[in-house]
Length: 94
Image (cartoon, rainbow, N blue to C red; front, side, top):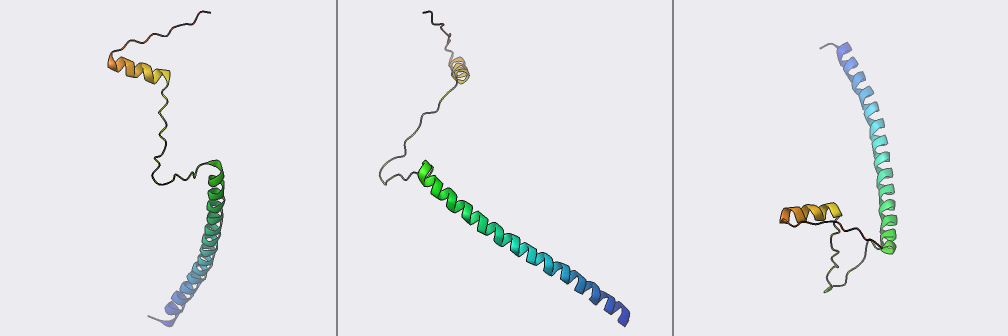
């Protein structure tokens, strides 16, 4: 190995390190900015959830209210067909 080849390799390594160091600083700044904004969003969302009911606290011993599933007319008709029940729509005449 001659000195010229070693110097060229060192120079290339230094240039690559400068690029790497700059990108690392940008990455850390972007990561810190993201974490700060993400925490702020979660704090605001939590405060809003307390007021709009998404974070409703259920006391111990009390069961969560179950809401019945709402079925569309088409779903009811499909279930009736599977069970072998015939459903006819009636028109109301006033």
